[in-house]
Each structure stands twice: as structure tokens, then as C-alpha cells.
Image (tube, rainbow, N blue to C red; front, side, top):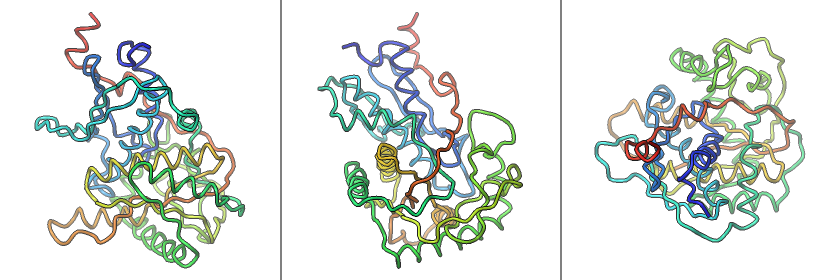
Length: 333
């Protein structure tokens, strides 16, 4: 079987799968560099950082981790296994998050192949969900998906869910009153078609204030006149946790999050994120220069359910996200 890094078509297929991953505000904060036929590097793109809500780069790393999971799955279905070296010790490469090499392996299980097949169908669904409960067997699959990537997915009961929603609502109010946040949001909610950001058609309805306090992407301008709707007051939530709270944990959390989201997609379950409290925590920690580390390590709050079909959001073109090392360019000459 041909090595997946040897041909332009092979590399294009891998990177196209990777960039279908979700990212905070659809910033797509990643770049890829082909190092000969030996490795494909995943880099952060600091020009796409969100300094107001993500000064530590936590959400950026989670986004890149989601892309890494897609890349691993895309390699796996070629009959190869991804050998990932996270954060290689390269002092002059501060943006390098992981080096991925490919080793021959048996063809993947049906389950892994179906996760790969779900990549182009995964959507962030910002619309109200029905009251239909997610079956217990599916909930168990979601928990197992997070565990497979070294993370944990908690499924809070009614009391814990109510507490989480109170935190989300309070954080959402604070963000809505922050001019710096609104300016940052405006940058990533374009009023014209482009290859990144959250376009108006993906905003979902304006929340009425009853039920789940979803993020209103129309606060910064476009989409302000769209319909108002109620969201469920008793949503089905998942809380993604890691044992630590540093860059390696964030990269791991992104892979776990994407595996959970692909598992949900495969089972017909809709999902979106309620991460306003994490945005506020990151902003507060980023403003401090010292102090104790947080006691908990929640990396994402996920809303699960059954929603209507929604369109996908745009992606940057393949040539814009891939570069080649001098060694790789020499091999093409």
C-alpha cells in the first residue's frame, strides 16, 4: 500500500479530513507542514488566536487537538497507524504541537472506519433540540469515546445541570457587556462569505432568555434580526475533563472532544458547546501573573440532543493551510 505522505492526493486527503474539525469561533487555528515523506507536522497559527477569551491558548490547543484526531483517523483508514509525538523538543519551533508519522498497520475496525466516515457530516448545531432523550447505550458510547483518548466525560444529573446552566448564564451576561469580547466576536462573525469564522446562517435563532443560555453569535452585528426561539430548560449535558490543565492536556482534550462528537454524529445525535464559563475563567487567569492553579479541569461543556439538520461552516482551502519543508519541496522537483 502506498505511503500516505508520498503523493499530493494522499496528503490532500489527510489534511482535508483534519481541517473539517470544529474550532473555537471557527478560527481554524492550525497549519500543517510536510517534512519530506517522513512526517506531517501540526502547528498552531498564532494569527488566529483569541486574546480576549483565550489568552492562555487553551481553546486553540483543543481546536488543534480535534484536527489531530481527524488526521489520525484519516491515516488509519489507509492501513497505517499514526505515530504522534506531541510537543517535540524543538526550541526554535514554538508553534509545533505534534509530529505525525505513519506506520503500516492492519486495516481499522468497522467502528473506527465509521468514525472516519462521520467526519464530513459532523456539525455544530446551535438550534433548539427536541425533548427526546439520548438513549443510555448512546450515552455510554460517548463516555467510552472520551475515555479512549485519555479524558473523562461526565453526564451531570438535574441538580448539577441546573448549577452549570447558572454558571453559563452568568458568564454569558458578562461577555455580552464586554466591548473587547464583542470586537473579537465581530472579527469572527463576518457579514460576507469567506473561508473561516461563523457565518450568519450558522448562528441559530436568537435565544429568548428562557432555557439554555446559548452563545448569541449575532451580538456583534450580522444576524441581529433573525427569529427568537426558546431553548430547553432541561438540556442533556456532558462535561469533558482532563487530569491536568496544561498544553498537553488541552491537546488531548481536543482529540477526546472530537471523538465524542464523531460518535454522536454516527448515532444521529446533535451537539454544540456551552463554553462561556470557561472563556471567562481563561480570561481571568490570563490577566493574572501568579496564583494557585484551578482545582478542576473542565475543558468543554457539551449540549447533546436531537436537532434539525444544519449546514456546515466554511473551511479555508487546502493550499492555505499546508506548507512543505525545503526537503519536501526538493523531492517534488
